Image 1 (cartoon, one colour):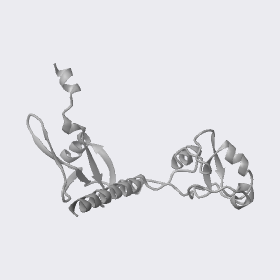
Image 2 (cartoon, helix red, strand yellow; image 1 turned 90 degrees about the vertical axis):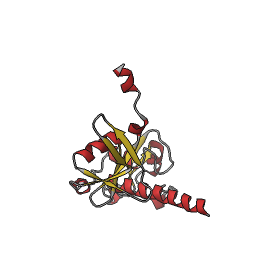
Image 3 (cartoon, helix red, strand yellow; image 1 turned 45 degrees about the horizontal axis):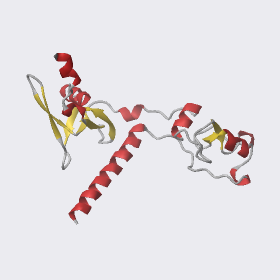
Image 4 (cartoon, helix red, strand yellow; image 1 turned 30 degrees about the vertical axis):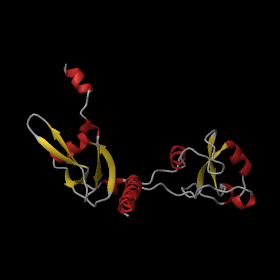
Length: 184
């Protein structure tokens, strides 16, 4: 009987909570169980924005109101992140495993936009993902010497929390616009 009850999780435990840093920077989305642990241990506090949802979680002894947004009260995790080294895995991840010249996702290699033989550095703003075909077509030449163009300008990856924050605030802006349009 207990095994069957465990497999049928209450709907409330399937929700997620947005975690903000001490500086109110949105860091990540976590499951509600992790949020409860952070709230109970005092490592986080509730945040209430205009229309914040509250989920009620019950145990035999306690009824908890878990908000949609919480803020960490300890540490400052955004200080500990360093820009990763320029290597194949990180460049492929940054470029979404896609050739930056033609968009192919097969037979990927790395290409130095300004070839090393012509003074190009092995740095985030000079290394891109390229398929075998585009890499051999470009060869040891500069972009203006070929008819090729980059799909996106190479740059160092940004802090994961900053990327999440941009995504979070953009999605909030969209929902706010939808609410505004709905009122018209």
